Length: 89
Image (cartoon, rainbow, N blue to C red; front, side):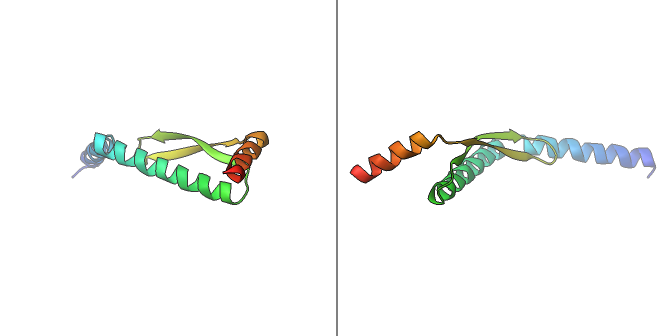
C-alpha cells in the first residue's frame, strides 16, 4: 500500500467519524450532558457563595468535538433578593 493509499484511507476514516459525530442522537446526548453539567456546576457555585454562573454553552461537533462554557457574574442585588425571598418562605 503506497503513501497515497494510506492518506486516502485515513481521510475516509476522518470523514466517517465526522458523520458519526454529527448524528442527531449524538448531538442530543451531548446537549443533555452539557446542560446537566451546567446545572451541577451552577449549584456548586451557588452553594459556595460565588457570584459567578455558567451562562452559556457552545458545542463544536468537530474532531475532536468540544464543549465550551461561558461564565457571567451574577448581580449581587439579584442574589440578595433571592436570599430575602428564601428567608421569608
